[in-house]
Structure formats: C-alpha cells, structure tokens
Length: 401
Image (cartoon, rainbow, N blue to C red; front, top):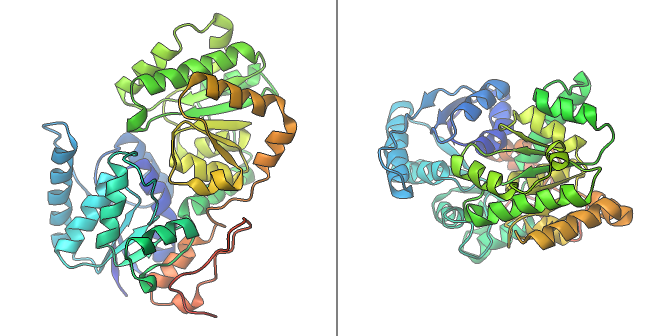
C-alpha cells in the first residue's frame, strides 16, 4: 500500500478530488488531505460534506498581497507537510496556486506527482495566472490525467510522453452525478437559501437563469457589463428569474452592484443575489435552472452533465469541447451579445433543445475509478472512456484489452 497526499486549497479542487479520495480510501490506501487555505469557510463545509479531513492545514499569513507572496507561502508550507508525512505520491488538481505549489514542492523532494485534470489550455495569456500554472505542472508531473482528447493532444504537443498520459474524463462529472443522485433520492430543495426558496415559490414554473462570475480577467468593467446584461434580460423577459451566488471578493460584489444600478423594482424582485452556495444546493440549482450564464470552468462541466445549456462570459475557454459539441456558446462580456443569445435561448425552443441534448463531452461518472486503477498499479483493468460526441475517445497510455 502507498501513502497519498491530496493537496487542495479551493472549492473546485476539493469537489474534483473528492471522488478520487473516496475510492483510494475504499481500496485500503492511506490518504491524507492537505488544505492550503485559499478558500476557508467554503472549503471547510465541503470537507465535511465529502468526509475528507483535512489532516493538515496551512495558515496563510498574507502579510502582503500578490501572487509571489502567496506562492512562496504555499511552497514553504507544503514542503513542511511533505517532511512530516513523507507521502509516496502527491495529487494535485487543475491550475490553482495550491496545485502549482504542491507539484513544485513534491518535485523538489523527488516525490511523484499525479496531475488530475491535466492538459487544459487556451493558448492565450488568459486565464491569468492559471494558464501558466497548467503548463508548469505539466513539466513536473509523473502521471497526467487529461479529461478529453483535446487535453491529451495539448500534452503531446508539449513533449509529454504518451506512456505517461491517461485520458480518463473529468472527476467533476463523478461528483456532480453522485450529488444529484443523493438529492433526487431525498427529494431535496430545502437546502436552498431561504431567499431562493421564496423567490422560486413566488414565480412557480418561471424560467430560471443561474449566473456566476468570478474570474480574474473579468474583474472590474467586464463583471459590470455582465451584471448590466442580466438587468437588461430581466427587463425584456418579464417571466425570467435569476439566481446569482456572489463571489466573496468585495470588489466583485461592488462591480455586480454597479452593473445592476438601473434595475427597476420589478426586475429586482426577480433576481436573488446570494452568498456562495453549498455544493449540493449548487447542483440542485443547476438541475432546476433553464440555462446558466457563467465564466466558471467547473460549472461548464457540471451543467453539461445535467443537460443544461451554457453561455460562457469569456473570450476563450480551455473547455472548448462543450462549445464544439454545441452545448455552450462563448458570448464574452458585451451586454448586447449576452442579451441576444440569452433571449434566443428563452424564446427558441428548438435552439434550446439542441443545446440541451448535447452529450456530456467531459466524462461518464467513472473517471475517479480509472485514475485510482492507474495509481494503484492496475491500468489493465481500466475501462475506456467513450463519449458520445464527434471525436473519437482514446485511452492514451493504457494497455489494450
């Protein structure tokens, strides 16, 4: 048996690591969780929900703002935990500062790194700094677990050896489907905030648009434009209701408020600005919504698993698969483009059904099983990831059956 250290610090990382953590524990492996501290209150509720510790925590001092200070603190803190628990493998996920810090600290101690959700690229400066984080982790990892053929091809072009790439799908689909099954079995809707419950009760059967906005490149005027577009949509679509879980960053909230300044009382009665939602409530709202407007990569993936169209408020996405398949549209942050595309989804049933019917290109709910089979030395038992989309899925690096 091996000892695995799961390195996470943000909400999306915890969600996407949870299925891997659960299966490693079920296989009898020793698994420890390190929380690196970027998201605190949201993170702790998720750790409790998924029953995954944490066993170690870094208390970030944040004496100075900036990515250099954060990266230095994380690197030193993670290194101290590695010295204590001496894992055989370090698992990192995605593109955060905690993922980069975990990969670098493990590499300096010659500990193999498994990179979950490897190979995502936009080929552009944004998202900053995540795009470079992904590239650097790709140079440090021992196992690469890309979710899709596009991600696999990105790694191959960058010189990663084919034998080290395992195309497995995305573990966020595992988590979303598992939570949706739990909620369906319990017939839950009372985990929504009270304000959301009241608004939905006041507008039964109304089309619901779920909105999120948090990416660094959208801070400032772009988020103001997104909010202004939401306000305009409420004005021209009198049946529409909106739920917008706000990012905790005060600047983001200020930008949302500025963008909604001109909203009429009737429009304000049909928008609910909430605190960040617990993960089960977020999955429930994705299942209940008509479509979502978001700059979140994770929500693009989760929405596709739940058959919900996505309007992406970015100029590019590292999850181009959903756009290529027809389940999402890149609308940017121009208010006119957002209003035009969202209104089309509300009035054009054929367009809506085409986008809703797009098969999920990111996974089938068994990605964690494939990852754990590889890590525990049983790649020959891994079932191939076949997605019902135009490109041919492959299991790069896996032995043929």
